[in-house]
Image (cartoon, rainbow, N blue to C red; front, side, top):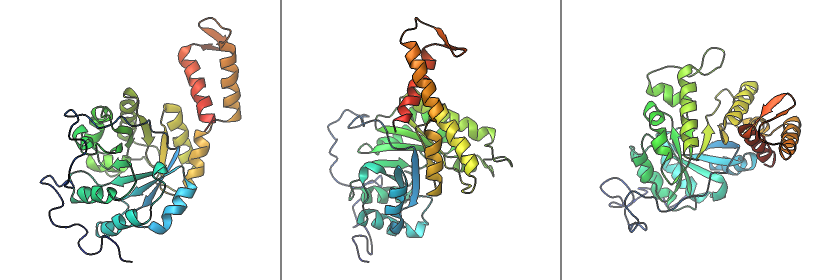
Amino acid sequence: MSGPFDGDPFEQGSFDEYGDPAGPDPFDDRPAGLSPFTPAPFTLGPALLFCPADRPERYAKAAERSDAVILDLEDAVAPADRAAARRALIEYPLDPSRTIVRINPSDTDDFALDLAALERTEYHDVMLAKTISAGQVERLAAFRVIALCETAAGVISATEIAAERNVVALMWGAEDLVASLGGTSSRLADGRYRDVARQARSLVLLAAGAHDKAAIDAVHLDITDTAGLHDEAADAVASGFTATACIHPSQVAVIRAAYQPTAAEVDYALGLLEAAATARGVFQHEGRMIDGPVLRHAEAVLRRAAL
C-alpha cells in the first residue's frame, strides 16, 4: 500500500535544531512556560487497551472491546517497523475521543517523527513514554498528555510533572522502573509486586491526586492470571485510580467488573447517604462511625455505579 510515508517520510529541513517539527507555533503569544489551554479532566476508562500501532487490522477490534485504545508507537513496535506504524496511524483513523497514542521518549529520534505523524491526525491525547521531567511535557503543549512515569527519575519527578497544565493523567509502569534500577523482576514468586514497585505505584497515585489529575494503574502481564488482575484492579479503584491499562482484550471484562461496584456496595452507599441526610455531625451507621470522608467514599461508589 502506498502512502505519504513511502520512502523518506519527511523532507530535509522539516525539523528545527531541537528535532521538533518546524513551522509556525500557533501559541507563540502565550506567556512563557504556560500551556495553551487547560484541558478537560480525563474521563476515559476504566479499561484502556494497548494496541500495537503497526497492526491496523486490530484497531477497530480493540476499540470495540475496550473503553479506550492506546495505539502504541513505542515498546509494542520494533524499531524497524515504526515508520509503518506512523503511516498506519494516519491511514486508519479511530474515534479521537476514545483513542490515546503512546509516543516515544522525548530524547529519541522517533519522538519528532511521532509528532510529525500526529499533526496529520485528529488525535489529541498522547501518552509520553518514560516521562522524567515537566520540561518534556511542555514540548507537547498542543496535546492532552498522559505522562508515563516508568523510570526511577520519572517516579521521583511525578509531582512536578503532574503540575503541568496540559497533563491530564499520570500512569506508572513496573517493568521499565525495575530495568532503570538495574533489577530483574518487579514481582515476587507469588505474583505480588516487590516493595519498590508498590512504592512507585503509590507515589505516582499521590502525585496525580495532589494536582487533581487522574491516575492509571499499570498493566498485568500475566494474561492467564485473571484472579490476580481482578485483585489488582479492585485495589486500584479502592485506592483512587481512575483506570487500569491492559494488554489483551480478555482483560477488559475483568477490569470493568472490578471497577463496577457490587449491588451490596451500592445499597450500603445509598442507605448511608440517606441516614446522613437527617444526622447531625458524626453519627453511627450499622455499627460504624461515619463522618465527612466516609460520606465521600459512599459518593464515589455511586459515581462509579453510574458508569
